[in-house]
Image (cartoon, rainbow, N blue to C red):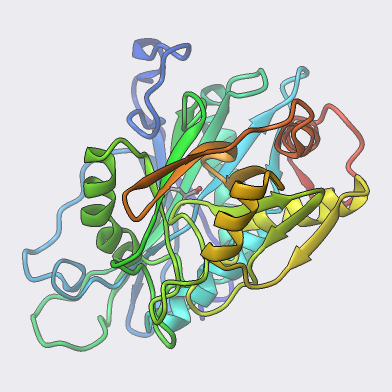
Length: 355
Ligand code: COI
């Protein structure tokens, strides 16, 4: 994988841009902190990494990523508690998942300890960009792109691994309305839907644009073969509460194994909520809506945290969810935020302090 020794060089920005930023009014993912972590792969190994000022990069037009899409990424967040301590949430899960995505896209794996050390060093350099207060965080975007020149359709021989970071607040301002897919698909059996690959997002944009024109914010993807089974929402995994049971579909090679998803399951169980991980059909959802047993739907993800869904559309018809006041989404969200912002005990050992 990498050279054994991790010799990070740090070049600091001459003048920080932090004073130009209105931290109380941030559009998601539009503002970037002062520095980025960069590591090149060539001659069969990862080279010595650097932290340097966030700046444009230069690539040849024939660089592999532009043609064949060898690009994977991760989504993580850093949080600050009231005493200015910095925390990550289950970062090992992201290190592992990025390497799973790498394998699927024929990209060389990045050493997990380098990821860990590099990320923590970057967060320390840009620590002022992490603002206190629940809801404020620094979104972390690690990604790898193929950079070899030439347009033969084969895996790149050179890559760059970057980590850039962006101060953020909530991804969605309020509840989300979704459309259940009955024609387009996000992923197929044997495909790479489980990888956090750029192409999985590109393929969603057009059907999502159509859904947005119809008044929805996101698409709930169904299985590509029958469109009968509810899968994920592209940016979020999904939870359905029918009566008092919280149901989510199993992960597969079509579905992203969300870190927030598995945290929701563990928290729900701890809160005494009955959970079921099993395939769930569109017909079951329609029936539960009609007979009143559907209590709530919510999405989970790093960017979106826990996002309640107010209603859904299916085959031209709109369905509203009559939600109770004691939402599982609210209880679970509170528990997860309390852990992330160091406001409660962490019985699961998920919080990792950046020292
Ligand atoms: C995340 O939740 O980290 C995501 O990957 C969503 C992102 C595409 C905005």
